[in-house]
Length: 201
Image 1 (tube, rainbow, N blue to C red):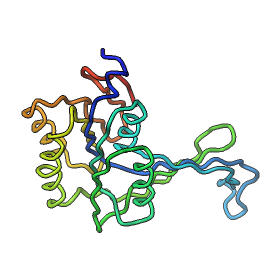
Image 2 (image 1 turned 180 degrees about the horizontal axis):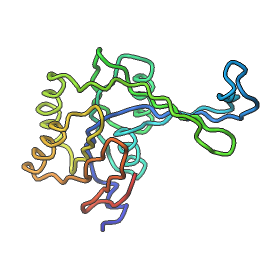
Image 3 (image 1 turned 120 degrees about the vertical axis):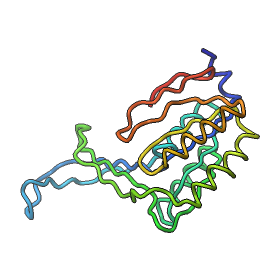
Image 4 (image 1 turned 90 degrees about the vertical axis):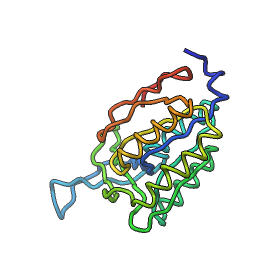
């Protein structure tokens, strides 16, 4: 396995579902008088991080690698937040807007002991449009093949499996390494294999 110093010079394209992961931390002080089965949480802290494929790209840049991120977002606040976070992490974002969907936002609520009380998902689960699939299959892959060393494709809820498999086939024919296996819908860990890095998410 190559060292992390070798990885720092690598350029990786990440394809897949992008999202914002928000964590809310607070204390439970009493039960809700409107519904005694529901606690009231007093919020102490809230943080947001890139999630899904954007998290993979952030991990790559944190190791001094170069990441190009390809995904779909909505024209909304979460999409703007994700674009800003990618910029702060030096991720080259090739994010496309889809007016028919929201940017996926996953909010996890934790109480003072670190126990996760609830997760709230805001997302649209229909597949990307045919025009967006064509864009990623042809234009993005052609552009990426000229400037990257490897591809990390993730198959999640929104991404079409055909897009993931076509990207793998295209990169293989171009002699570009594939750095990861597809992750399934429940986030089973995917191994970054190959000559650059071995890790888990």
